[in-house]
Length: 319
Image (cartoon, rainbow, N blue to C red; front, side, top):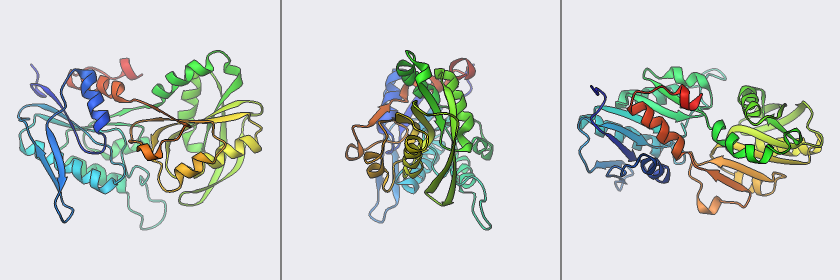
């Protein structure tokens, strides 16, 4: 007997409509009928235009720019479905905002990631499906199940075609010590060696490269990170790899293209040959550069949603 919902329904907030449509298409389902609007004073109004009673509902919404509006919109959608007697509600968050505020870096700092987790749980979500949280321990901030996908598999499958013929020409570089595990797993997947950038961060959104640990001389470098925000770390790292390390070219792979502030201009003027992103955060047409390659996440999330609905394990599909 199916206790978690008689049918499956995919709904979308306003931040990831294309991804939601792609997920629904992969599952052979129509996108749920709903809309989100704003009152004249800025309050968010959500309307669900079909019955969700007894349904297994999945709400697709990244909490990217505008972060607070998208977060509030998702919370209101969860509440609306809870009050409409949905059997189970899953918050599908390809990009989880506030994830970088996961600890107290100095006295009197908030832990905003934990606050967001509490808000999502209190609103009525039964589980969360997300990709590449900035820190794995954020899964423990929730008192509900969290299914955590990794974007490196999608990126690795794309890069394998380029690397396969001459893997010795390439090296994967971690942009900092905190990303070493991610970079090592990625390098293992595509069959290359690994190097690490040793940097310091004197203040927020500012980084300085101190050393490059490993040999990148004469190599084609793949810089791997979970997100690109202002692109300062990425562009400084790429420049250091070329100038200090002697690499012949640098490309970058990242799951989340937040691309705020001066990011587009920095990437445009950088030594980076290519930047490969996933569409966890929508990339507006005005920000699209020739250097960008954007890969779809919809098939991966559709597979995950199908497994959640059918109570199947994740490990056979996602390792």
